Image 1 (spheres, helix red, strand yellow):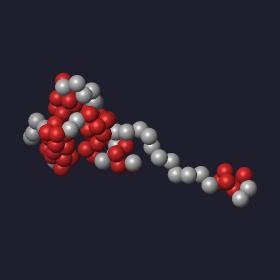
Image 2 (image 1 turned 120 degrees about the horizontal axis):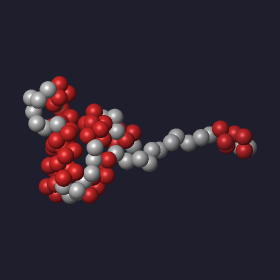
Image 3 (image 1 turned 180 degrees about the vertical axis):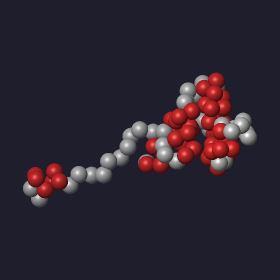
Image 4 (image 1 turned 90 degrees about the vertical axis):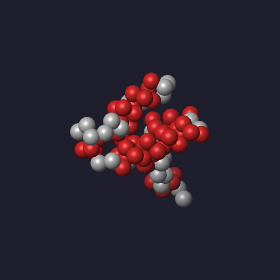
Length: 92
């Protein structure tokens, strides 16, 4: 194979950016990790209108505040992307 052909065979890109939620998960273990995963799953399974119209206090804004207050800085937009499945976790 010549150089021209070799340069046409571009490998598939692999994102190196990790989701902010994944970064937090890497710092946790035991009960903290289990409860975070459970909370994320509950929020993700809830219809968006139930979270946004005040039917529950379990929102991404609340979770962002709790995590930040406990030393894990994360924005609600990062959490929104994660619970909606559009974060880097879905592409790795």
